[in-house]
Image (cartoon, rainbow, N blue to C red; front, side, top):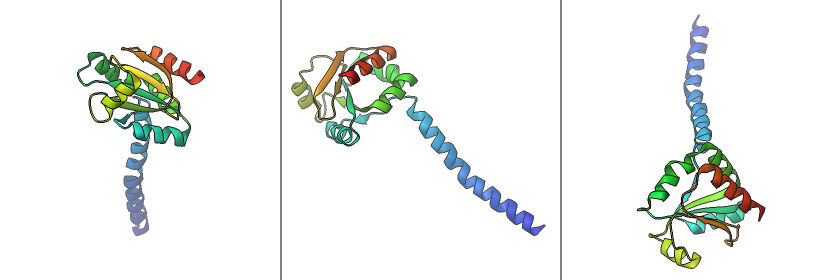
Length: 149
């Protein structure tokens, strides 16, 4: 009887420890397919990761006051198909073009409107770009075309 109680206690304790870890790991992996995961405001970090992983860089160049930029963040970038595609194929970076290194990059890249979406190769050379709000299917096509270049 005591052995059963002890076994039940340890089994319950083990489940109490392992189950939340498993659920958290599953939640984390499904969260990644719910939105595009961006490095925030660090072009240098994006270049570093792209070089290490041999991936292209997808840049969301935005301004905090920009309504189409906000629409991208709340709709297109939260589309599960777009999220899976971009999280698997690109290093994604969102840069506020009016803060930190943003103004310098905006001048260097010749940006004139927001949002501007740009794909760079792993060395930082521009491959493709588009300006303005686009829907998820168009964003996926944009990325597919950039990967062919």
